[in-house]
Length: 628
Ligand code: ASP
Image (cartoon, rainbow, N blue to C red; front, top):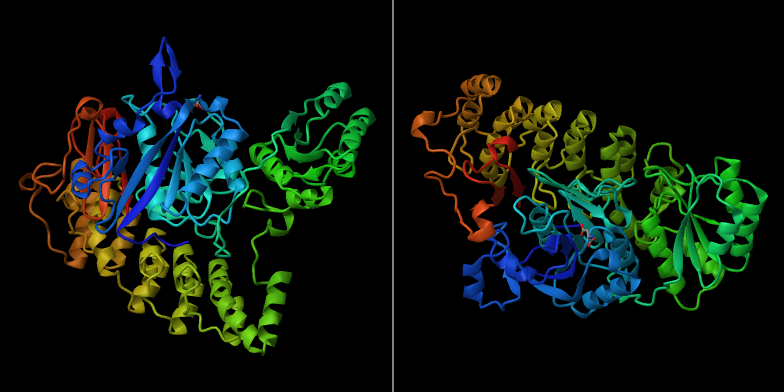
């Protein structure tokens, strides 16, 4: 996974309906047309000057610059008819997949604007239907319409557009409340709160806060550069049956009748069901006549295991374990597997039991592979040290950097030493552009860091995102690692130093002394101004963070940084600072877009201060910052 490059990133936003664009009609919410026109009026979603200069068509919008050299341009395609997602079915999702296929070459990525009620089903279905995906497809929506005063739609849609426009995440994902989740791992868990979705068995692929943290290890890799395949023939006769204590066998029998071809059976705990013979008989009979039944747990978290006799009996009756799949993913997978032509029942069962699109953690991969002591590690080690032929050398060269990063992540010095003996110089970057030093610094393994430094690895190497090991250690507040890196001559890159002012102000506003100390230790100038022209000291003073004021004075005294002018003579906030305020008529009068250098902030507010030192919600200010 790398950052997307190129001056213009083009996205297709497919608007299918859902609360995000809904309007009230006779007291109830119904899908609303004209989302592109609403977005056009909001400066955070559209830069009219740029659009005019480029003569973009009416349905095409352009985001304000998120970085100096890149623009996200997006075209909104409005679905006919717009739907409450409760009315969506596999048929509509297959059509969305076909729309993506038709426009695949034209765009860098896709955003699907969808109702939240069935968004997890939609994301799961799309993940299976779209094979060999090499571009991001991100679903998003809202709990409150985008034109309401206080809503989650703006943040969610903007986040989805930015993630799809700026990162090469070749997966179907779901973006909601600052989290990018794998689509087929997500489930809706709340009908009111803005945090409507969770991914119970897989951490988010990315989290957006002051920084955008991408969980690279989790993001699917493009394995083969093969063309996109859209499996739009999906089986619709699939269903979900939730077991409950005392469920009659007759009811189960009635449910499992043709034309049903596949069922997700939601069972108790770790995949258990009542053991009464009549019930097991029905399940066995259905599986025997070719009905595919996947066993998924009721529980939000955890997996189906064979720990209990009451669970083992289901496997014995011919059910396939769904491990830790959500029911939504299991249903979509059934529809996909049953829709594939020319497969035998056993082939289909085998596909169901395999991880196809990152939808489940099959038992063999449940534990994180570690070089130390694991059979995998031993076998790889043996294989690598025995290799002689040219081909094996090439395999070894490709594997060693990743293995070294894995060892650095685990802080496993023995494994690192073993890799040196196999010929690794421990300084080579892996496929993501990160060296073992980046990994060890990010995780905070001082032992691994000093070993790598002793071996003379490049202390100021940049990873795929242009970040230095020192910055990663600063973000993790790993003081001993920062000390080791500094002693070895590490310094923050010019870009990192340039960005430091705003970050320091943010830490000062949050009274984060530990974070400030980490930056100071890394050599940042604590007197550096944030994007609104104020110093961290001024921010801390105006926020009343006295401990931080004292700390800053002490640290700056020690560092000898130049003090900025007195607070009163230094205009803060928007006054006299290079912030572009864009007043929006109508709805947007409550909305102001800020653009400054490589960072920008969204504020939804009445009046007052914009920037990293925004006050609490009680002052009607609420900010999110993004670093590009
Ligand atoms: N009923 C709406 C839908 O799913 C709910 C939402 O979008 O939040 O379309």
